[in-house]
Image 1 (tube, rainbow, N blue to C red):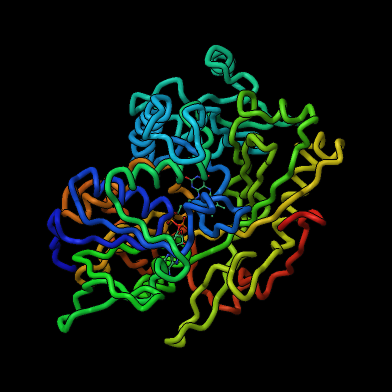
Image 2: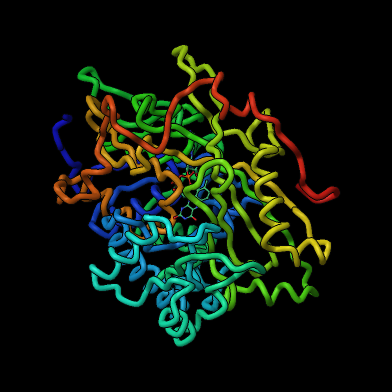
Length: 482
Ligand SMILES: Cc1cc2nc3c(=O)[nH]c(=O)nc-3n(C[C@H](O)[C@H](O)[C@H](O)COP(=O)(O)OP(=O)(O)OC[C@H]3O[C@@H](n4cnc5c(N)ncnc54)[C@H](O)[C@@H]3O)c2cc1C
């Protein structure tokens, strides 16, 4: 175990990565009085505004993400959501007040999340154990009447009273499920813009540039302590603590994560509803929830989706198979690396055929009104997660390396914690509250022999999940800008 030696409030702290982990950490460091915080990122987010269609390549750069309290028996995350929701709502208050809190290009009418609920659905006859645990866990923690089962009369009545009646059965065929009325949809790009602006207002410095912001390596002193980073422009930036928060790029930048975390791809499609289509109303967030379908059922399930956004974009994602892109690294070890349409030199504009097949079947079975109106897939995306073997985050000092931390391995569920995860990162850096269950779950760890875990990591280029072994298809609409 590396000894805890937190930096002083006036020491320089470097964060690498301006996704949600980096942004949130920057905000909370500044709010706790750290005066020399600098965030480096290779992407010019002030220009590209966290928009995927403007070339942004990060899990956090997206149109929307699910917010949920529903976490089965993992009540530590349930309570983390309750903490986050307070700040999500406070951010709305800040926006409403207008003035300096409103980021450039946004207005005080903008929202960063919508409480349209998140429904977890199955085509089975009984609720999966996870959902039953959620209902129990939420009730036990005092969040009564928030998890509504869509075949129970009193829950349907409650849904009506709370304005969630239509969200209880969002599709053309009935499915069994539980609506988490605490949750809904984060407006991902605007939330990141808000957080970036907030961090800057608190005095955090940002270097968002393909060269000056690109991390190349850490610098170590004679004792092996990390004393800062070198960026692609050749400059050295001193730091008493360096926090690497590079999402799916972290496992190749910090190979110490071997066996603990690996980057994997999810497949996403976006359908575009014309402005004149009556379906814009049908899929608006005032009627339609965020949803998951057979999300823990393996390759034939793993679907999730959202209401249409303000531009009529209807997004559906597939996570049933977690694809990898293993490439031999300088040390000879194969590690998965993100590859997307925006990857320099080798852009990939395709998604796995298997993902498309599962999505198309779902569209035919449950959303036939889209096909009936001639609405098809407009854009596809491979979106890269950083998954730990057990789906818990990794927020800790890199073992054996003083001065270096990671805040990463969002494992597909960290966006909702943009407002508050940074507070936990700072606690961990300062050595505060280390016996809390969540903090323990995020500690540096190794999969024990015989331990069952949801993710099998580092199977290499022979894996059936490796993109090189998977048929890929292109379905982007022709003549579109991308
Ligand atoms: C398809 C998809 C759907 C998801 N859905 C949900 C959801 O519904 N709800 C939810 O809560 N969570 C969801 N997640 C998870 C959530 O998006 C992630 O956990 C979170 O956004 C990860 O943030 P991050 O800061 O770790 O990484 P990222 O957002 O990927 O950011 C990493 C940053 O590091 C930068 N970087 C990389 N290399 C370098 C370098 N060498 N130098 C400088 N900067 C570098 C990148 O430019 C990038 O800005 C989803 C993830 C994906 C991929």
